[in-house]
Image (cartoon, rainbow, N blue to C red; front, top):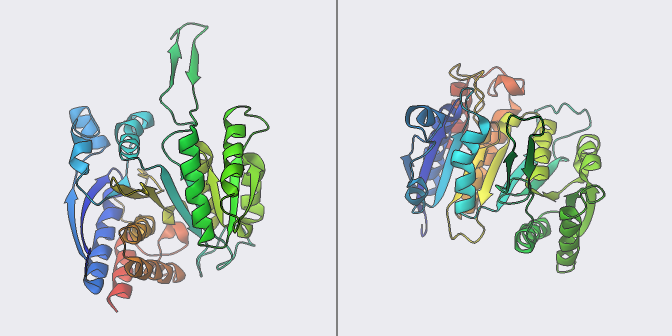
Length: 355
């Protein structure tokens, strides 16, 4: 099969990251064999553990080491004895920004057999994608702390919105909506944030004119969060800034039943650089080593990776296996109302793909 050989950089990370990545690699081995794909994996020990031992989350030439790969598969980063800003800015954000992964894609579905905490959120009705701007916005490096330790100490954090950055994420979201149900919602707060969000709104309106087949609207973030809970079925593609997209996607994952099943893709749509795929759930130190971590978020992230690499049939098979496992309480983990261990859930995924 042409183009079926890919080199994947694997960063298991911290906490339950190595557990869910081990499960995901088993799934990828099976689906690769079934579809004639050649996936080779190179593992990197970059993590908070490395930071504690060597003073850095990754080596100085870490980004150069990743450039030759076709994709990056990440487990989780973070542990209680390392500040979150150290782990985030020492690994994830440098990768996202150096490789221009300006799209953070987070699909959300309510699966058959998996109860949402919302009584009206039904399978087949709640199926949306949050498109989060991933490299600028509120998560900028511009700012600082002044007069540390004095009564007049202050902190300044600047949000950076560029025309090129907003345009490209909005265009991506419109094009995605055009290939789905043709509906886009833009998250804003231009009634309270008087410079960056009106600028965002203006660009959304400009780009909407280039996509006449997509119905669109905009919602203030506070009202939008409420509607995610009250009417999740009305949404198709939701585009937001770095901060708004981050918050909305976690909220939507909870609506779907558990953050443990939520995937994400950090994409460079130009394919100039490798894209990175990771579950949303984090390192979960409270359950690390207990054998109960839910592998679905990582496995679904791997399905997004397969699709990005040009293998939609293989990706669809993995997602079908996920749906099958989540439908049965005996094969889903405790965080989604089941009784299975990580091992049992992984075995069920592999068994479905081996049929």
